[in-house]
Length: 244
Image 1: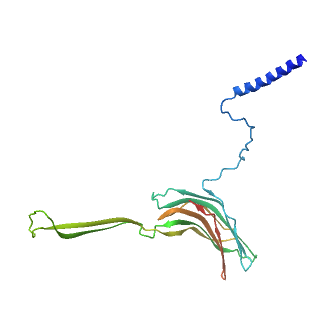
Image 2 (image 1 turned 45 degrees about the horizontal axis):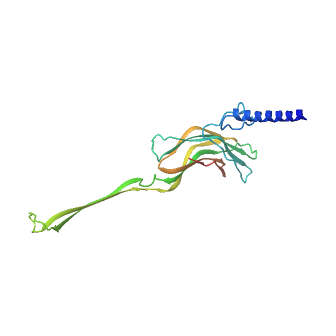
Image 3 (image 1 turned 60 degrees about the vertical axis):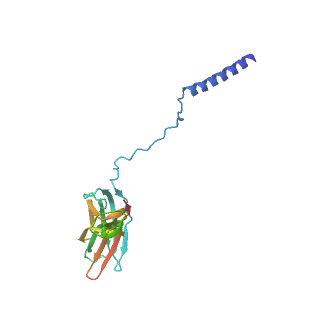
């Protein structure tokens, strides 16, 4: 009986000592150690997206009454704002790029389709200052001569008590001519083609607008047309709107 009691006391002292030892050895303010988390490594052979990468919208498709199908899409788009060469705060300039592809499929009548593929960009400006007076100074100035009476002795050629006086009024101000925003359309190219799969590639192309105050928005566009002697069909595609 005595041996059992001694063993119980020894085990209790050993357990308390282990807890105290762990508590004293832990640094103050130490966070509990968590299990390591496996972080997946980036896929090999996959390059990072380019600067200013923009996700393209789904392809635009239309079908003509004579059985032709026109499809227009884009990929690898980039749109990056850059400092303008004029260093003007009212100028917006961008470096853009992308590949725009068209597809024309229809009845095999022996003649390849022909038409035009146009690619460009739309830049929207919140406040337009290009077609107004801009910043201008306004002011008025005038002189008002007068004759007044004073109560002191004064030697003058005028009757006694009359002294001439001159008063002036000067006023000035600054006016800023602003107009509601507008959309600037910048056409990069208009490619005439003969064939079923036209395409246009744009790389490191600069577009800019002047007289813009506040936020600006940019998006790409493309128009694909099929032209014959009797008809013309056009499908339009618009990219994602990016706010700068």
